[in-house]
Amino acid sequence: MPDISTAFNEIREQHADEGVPATREILHSLKERVGVEHFCYLRMGDRDPDDVGAVLTTYPDEWHDRYVRQNYQLIDPVVQKGLKSFLPMDWALAKKDDPLVRQFFGEAAEFGVCPSGLTIPVRDPHGRRALFSLNSGMKQPEFEGFTREFMSDLQYLGHLVHDHVCREGGLDFPLKLLTNREVEVMKWAALGKTSWETARICNLAPNTVKFYVRNATAKLEASNKAHAVAKAVKMGIISI
Image 1 (cartoon, one colour):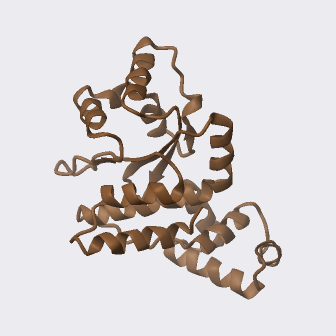
Image 2 (spheres, rainbow, N blue to C red):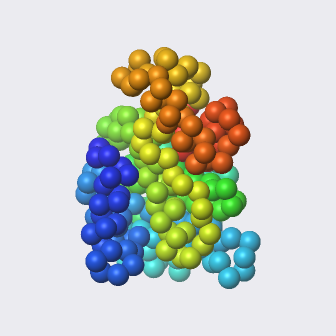
């Protein structure tokens, strides 16, 4: 797995030469570097009636068009559960006892959607809700190992994409995202580790850990470290 923020920014700069870097083109380039077949981003419409939300995928246009035309978001168990959850959802856990749901997954497979997938809920300080999904041709045990190892990176990528889509759409999104190091130290803080313990685990100086914690706390607009940890967990930036 490449450094997520570096890879995302490099690809965004490459596409910037073509004008405003479109999120779909960024996702197409990024999927090869991450090692998955497809990405999908779905943001629900805001309370503003002019905001109808956004859907951006690397799936074939035929499947995207059919999904929208058939209103499959109303029966897609991944979407239905993901919008109510704060935790990532492995597609293998989706219930398929409804005939309509089984038909939906069968059609998806015909259009090249792989069976292994993960959906990450994204929440931002403005109350906007989004789902960021990755789809892989890996066998399920391999995919579970992949997502377990890189879960923090994948959640962070979901927030990077959400941030870019909101900016691309001219929506207010002032929150600065955390760096990989800031995510790492906040994750250990969430697990109850002191700055000294985190420094030993991450091979950093204790003062460096404190520096990352202060930065993360400021970016999350939190009052202290505990508040920052709580916000990071709620927003899905870190998982414990």
